[in-house]
Length: 108
Length: 115
Image (tube, rainbow over all chains, first blue to last red; front, side):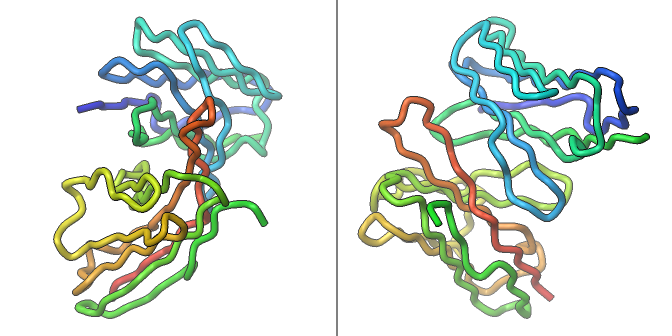
């Protein structure tokens, strides 16, 4: 059974500083998804990482995938308030298995 | 509107009552998924359909839960004899398996409160 572990679970960030969220998963997966969820809202797709070594960037967020290590990272550069949300990683199977999520808050 | 839609958005019911939720996927998407999310947790897979066939059900899906997708279009999720532990956000997602990424697109969810 696929298990997904994210850390940290809570991240209080200061504006303009850099942070990284880690996503470890237990069984082989050839791709991985990152989603964002605002409070009380549904999930918004951020990145689809399709192969080992894949790197995607959008604004202040950059995601990477190491399938051999079963590890994905989401790097935040120069955090700003509108990045406050919960972020989930989900390795691909025919169904998605989500981690518990990382709750990010950005403080001035 | 070409996104996934779900109705109702909120449902408050008394314990023991039956409830039914509806999901309309993105047009032409052949896969439809149901997930449940409780506070502070990630979504948990419940079941999925490919066209009208229900291909997998999670062990989380007790006998009180049933899902259908007649004609491979919209889907319904029914919960019979609701319990307080059923209170959660029920999320629907759809995807097109022939599409390269297999990306799932989520609807806004139905929040169920059982009193």
